Image (cartoon, rainbow, N blue to C red; front, side, top):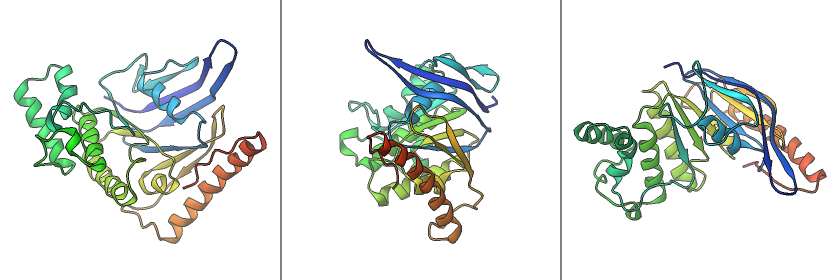
Length: 264
């Protein structure tokens, strides 16, 4: 299936009894098949809202999301999602967590096991397949979540701050693990992060959002060969530029009486 994503004039309004909050406004973006796009922006600007609309977990107030040639009208097996909080089943083993999506799809037991073990090996967890979730470190849990999302072979992988709760060393390892795995697939990846360093290290393009209501401030092409050297002049220059664009938005937030920084 073609996994191009076309986001056309998206708008999302959240309503409560006494007010309306506009999360996204006039948002349009084309994402190419096989591309890794990172979304950065001020805290609370609507990054996760955007991701959940692509996932089909939230319905746009207006506008549309098209994946391939099909309008997104709800969740589907063509999309996998990895959350920051792991969202694993503690009563299941590592392997049975990874198999969960295959069970829902009625994949035969022997095939489920074979595919699950393939991705468990891919994320470096062979030997831990029978362990329970509570026996794992944070980094290992996130490897399980990544394997579970990838095992169904989604056309689109949506990642919401997946490494945000990990320590710096484990986070760097997981970034390399992700790049190693996606070299073997053609999944289109939309990656929400608060870390500009992570966005520059991973992405083909970085989409910078404005403060809420979010629209696109700038799209930055990352034309650096992988693996990327974080200490290189080109890497530092790109990182500095994106940080400055975010700081401009945070200046506006402070002028409104808010201080919400995404500048690590």
